[in-house]
Length: 344
Image 1 (cartoon, rainbow, N blue to C red):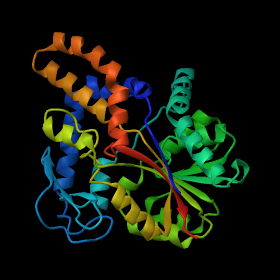
Image 2: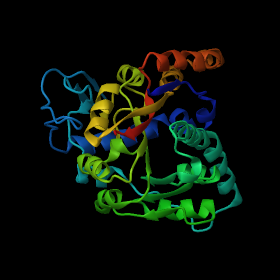
Image 3: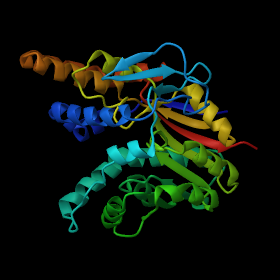
Image 4: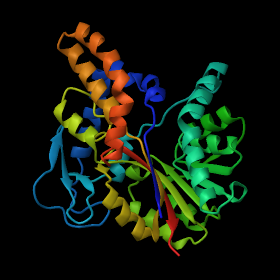
């Protein structure tokens, strides 16, 4: 029987996400450019997950982008297709200095400890409870970014490595960890790597929503019997979508930008079954209340009510974790961490 866990304090991410508060206009301009790139693509004709033809009424529109709810699997699809051309337009490679300071390493270590160690502990504990000892885990992290999750797993004593498209992020991750934890892999090679890896656990932290050739990746996982577990986190259709649609002058963190489709419990179940997997454990802890808090604060500032914002902010922050936990438990949170196990 699968186990569901709910809630996590937003305190750790408020400081990290400060740009969303302080640079709303710049972030909004960036999202407009990303919307331009998506609107230049072909109309999406079928659901990203189940391939049911897209038809019927629009569920909602936010910052020029329309979204449809799939009647078959419950996935939420944007009206336009994510394509290789779209990816080239919006995924700008980060640049990092060749010389890294101790301050960089301290910030990296703090983020790894506060954000990624709890995720790594959740995965390890769930696998151990299912009979896979920590010493027997061999993890491959796909779309490993700057190597935070791989670094967290290695810090906890797990045999973990990662692959990442961006050579700059690979260089940065390896420098921050003091050893080679990631290797660069071109996007057209990743499905082949997954099909042949001897890792028994795969992880995809904030990755599935960005994969253009998602079906090919899912089939590679299905065919590779070495893979026993898949750990993923994805954006969900949630309260944040409602807040974003109702605050059109605030940056859309959740839907829009590079997120051209959003998951639901039912579309995740459909996807897992397509892979030949089923849910083992999950952890829901959304950022919906942080999004609401941010949008209220930004809107108050925009309307010349900074004094009211300063009065409101500390009162809301006292309630934010309790409010988010209610959203999480009612299965309408913005994010899920999901562990899938191969069906017997």
